[in-house]
Image 1: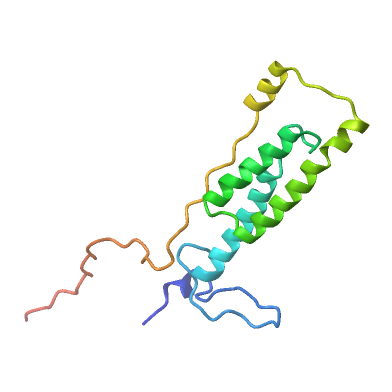
Image 2 (image 1 turned 180 degrees about the vertical axis):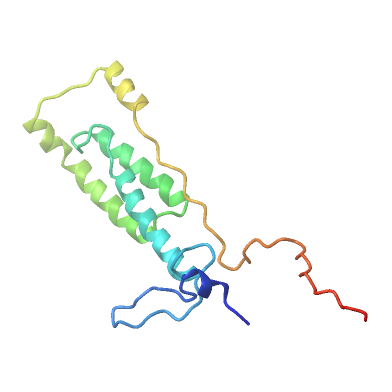
Length: 161
């Protein structure tokens, strides 16, 4: 039995390395160039977490000086929790921080005098970027796509003689 990966130079095993220099011994996932299904999913979650963190924390004006800014971010947080993209524990901590930010707004208003006209507020809301869609999760238990019927290998012809 030969391994197709040995001829292409791609390692047949997962290349994830633990902190104590051990390597994962699982077979590499066909859906990822270097990791098994478990570590490929971990990498996808880490990348998605970073991207989602940037998206959720982006307020309307780039700062958290108004209740509208904080409310907009909390709304995106609500959507991310509903889509199961953020854990409830992390969401609870972020909500608590949002509550602290909201309670400090009267002090911010004493330091800075600013007002918005309704048309300005509508314009800001119209230009606000919504939260992106969650990425598609590849099911690690499903088999890679294979042709329904494998072609018959060529057989040498027998000489009758």
